[in-house]
Amino acid sequence: MKDALVPVLVVIGLLLLAGLTLFLVRRPRRGTLPEAPAGEQRPGIERGEQIPPSVITAPAPEKPTPEKAAPGKPAVVPAPAPPAPAETAPPVEVAPPKPAAPEIETPEPTAGRLVRLRARLSRSQNVFGKGLLGLLSRDHLDDDAWDEVEESLISADVGVQATTEIVAKLRERTRVLGTRNTAELRTLLTEELTEALDPKMDRSLHTGVVDGKPSVILVVGVNGAGKTTSCGKIARVLVADGHTVVLGAADTFRAAAADQLATWASRVGAQVVRGPEGGDPAAVAFDAVKKGIDAGVDTVLIDTAGRLQNKVGLMDELGKIKRVVEKHGPVSETLLVLDATAGQNGLSQARVFTEVADVTGVVLTKLDGTAKGGIVIAVQRALGIPVKLVGLGEGPDDLAPFDPAQFVSALLGDE
Image (cartoon, rainbow, N blue to C red):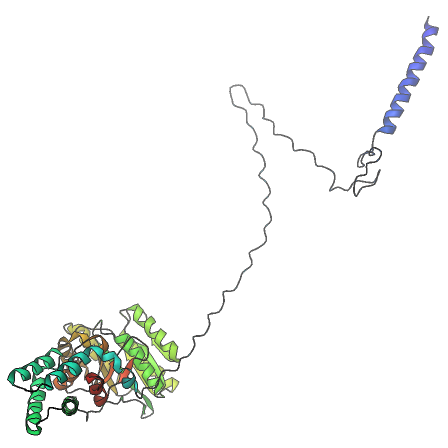
């Protein structure tokens, strides 16, 4: 019986050996792909070729298994490892574009500006040209007619005293000459108004080098009169006449004033000296004159803070600015900026400034916005100070040197 089982066991052993051999032969080696079926070709990898590491799929990460906890305590699951941060390229710094240099403007010539801007006096022309000439052209000039002439002049802010003198001269000349012709009356009125403006007054700006140092012009005035804007326009007037200018932003109480002045200066290529907000205005004025001396310019223009005439402390400060500036040399000009639309109130402002700052000339702004062009006569008659510049618009070159004959011609309008 045992001998009969031996052949059977041998056959079974041979069959197991053959099956194991067949299994090992057909199993693919690690790192190679199994052969593709007939007619199928895997791109990029030949049959039996060694597989690159990038193709072999990494095994899935094993899930964390909770640790066995002691009886009565919760199981602790380890936290998964945080993902590796993605590498990012460092930001590329882009340099900001350089601001373009401001274009230097060439201001319009000052000669003849008042003639070119005469149309801006249209409101005053209605009072002087149409109003007065119409009254004087009546067939019979009685006392009532002359009273109307006086009222027209007073309403135009010529002033009571100046009006009385002008009307008296007109009455005498028309009586003696027996004039009734409109052209002749216009000539008489032109002569009297021009005489009231005192054409012999010196209206030039005192600029240029004095004893090897630049002349200094202080610009003063109350808030709202257009002082800083006028200062910028005065700089354009000086540049247009061939002067070199340094501007001092001594209005340190209003930060916008220094920025505004710097804008005006950049348009004509002038330099600006400014100080910290709330700083000492006298120190800024002193540094501005020193800068003008070092730069070799012929004029230093200093903008001061707007002041109300009833604030004694601020007016004293204006006197301090003048004293500090005069350590370099005398102040050549002190220009008072007045608002023409303020009318007779401007006279009280002007009187106080002349007492404190020794005003040498008046800049009358906003003259195009009022029918009271006679304020020019009133200012000069009351103060004995010449009007040197008049503002006739908001444009950069709408500040014109004052000429009495041209101004009266513009007041009376076209013939």
